[in-house]
Image 1: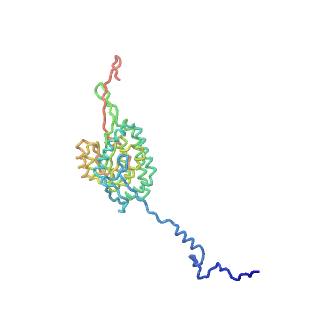
Image 2: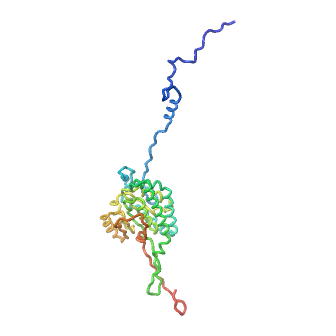
Image 3: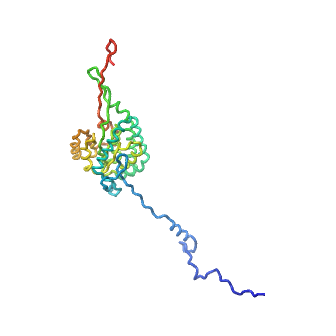
Length: 340
C-alpha cells in the first residue's frame, strides 16, 4: 500500500497583512454602504453646459447672419449679458427691401380672408411659445414673470384683433361717393407696397406687434428694424413667422442701429411708406426729409408716447393704404329716366 501524503495544501485564506484594506462607512464601521456611495458619486453625470441661442436676422423667409458678420452685446434691464445680436448693415437693409418687394405681389393679391387666416396662425404659434417669449420680455424690460406673460398675452390678442380686420377694412374705409353727375363713384383701399417700420424702443414685443401687424393686415409687406436695446423678442418672432404660413419676404426683421439702417430705408426708392415710431425727434426729422425724395407716406412718432396696451384704432392701417376711385357712367331705364 502506498503511504498517504502528509503534505498540506496551502490555505486559500490570506494573512491580515496580505488582505486589502476594508472600506469604512461614514459612521466609522466597516461595511458596504461607503462603497455604494463612492460608486454613485463615480457614476453621477457631470454638470452640463447650457446651450446659448444664436440669434439671426429674418429676411426673405430665411435666417441669415449679418452681411458684415458683426454682432453686438445685448444686456438685460440690470446690465447682465443676455446674448449677441447681429448688427445689420445697409446691405442687409437693401436685401430686406428686395425680399419684401418680391413678396408684395403674392401677399397683396391674396384674399383678405386668407391674410386673416395667416395672421391668426401667427397668434396660434406665438401662444404655443408664450413661456419663451415671457422670459425674453422679462429680461428685456425688467418685468416680473406675471407682467411679462401679460405682455405676451396682449401681443397674441393684438394679432387676433388685426386678423379680424383684414376682410372688413374695405367696407369701413371704402364706399360709394355721391357725385353731381350721371356716374357711379366708388372708392376702395389698396396696399401701398413695401413699408419700412422702426419698431418702438421700449416695448420689445407688444409694441413691435402693434406696428407690424397692421402693415401685414392691409396687404403691404414690411421691413422692420427692431429695438436696438431690446431686439431678442423681435428676432424670436421671426421664428414664429417662419412657421405660420406667412410667405417668405412678407415680414423681414433686422436688428442694429437706426443710425445705420434708417437713412437707407428712408431714401430707398422701392420703399413706399415708413413708420418712424422708433426714431427720436432729431432722427425722425432727418428721416422724413429723406423720405420726401420719392414721396413716401410717413407716419410720425406719437407725442406723448403711445400706450401699447390700449385698443388700437385704424390709424396705422389707413396710413399705409392708397385709395383707388372708380367712375362708371350710369344709364337710364324706361321713359321715366330712372338710373341704375
